[in-house]
Length: 346
Image (cartoon, rainbow, N blue to C red):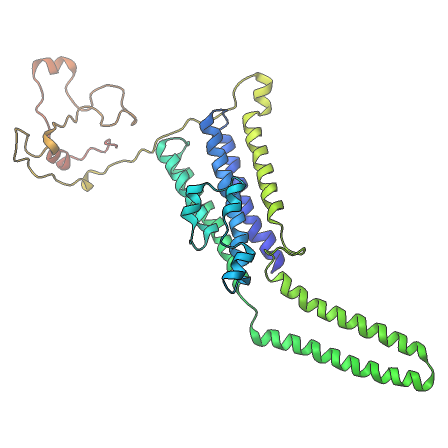
């Protein structure tokens, strides 16, 4: 269980943080304030989730309010002092269960906002990838907390402990019998060997029971537990090295050019005419019947200047020479519904 938590689950969370930061190092290689803030906020949220994971895992040992205060389960002030949590974010996490998982919802929502704002290339593909990575990290955190909060069956624990105690009692009886024979026969070296054997055997089995208790929750502050400071420091140092590598790649230094960056893109979605709803006729004013808000619909030009095929030319309409002789009649939304235009985009 200990190795599984460390090498698969916890490392999976750290790998997700590294993957996102490496992606941002390529997408935002510039030295602008916006690029630096975007990279630092994802790194800050990632490290924050690791720190909150340790606090959430310590709740297993808190049986009352005094234990929670002693273990610092509800104290988020240290995270604010470290710069990992802002005051208004602290209020959002106050009295919130599964705080380490909530942070990954923040990360997914922030990436979604960047995709909608056109700050990332291939926004739809990036959003799907980021959502999968956030779900993977959140699932790993949930599995860690499930492992930590799952106790061994009471009957199993009683059986193991009873076997150890009975074995130690039998060993003590045998050692006492041999000890009395050694005194009677003057073989005193038997006394020494049995005494050493009894002490070592007892300490060994008792230590095995204590180690089992320690490794069930490796997120405490014991010497055998994981170190949250080491995990956070490694994540920060590794990902800031990624950011620096994205700003100063070798080819940019050699050719004295800026690092390569894909252009951002806006999400373009196609509208199917069958999904358009009919608008009711306007009763006031001189609005044409069937046109929304009294606006005349001009289907001769492409609806979206950012959509493909918009070069300022008329689509399926009269030429400029023909327009001078006879002006075309306006088409309403009902006409568009009867004659779907596959090239209509939003």
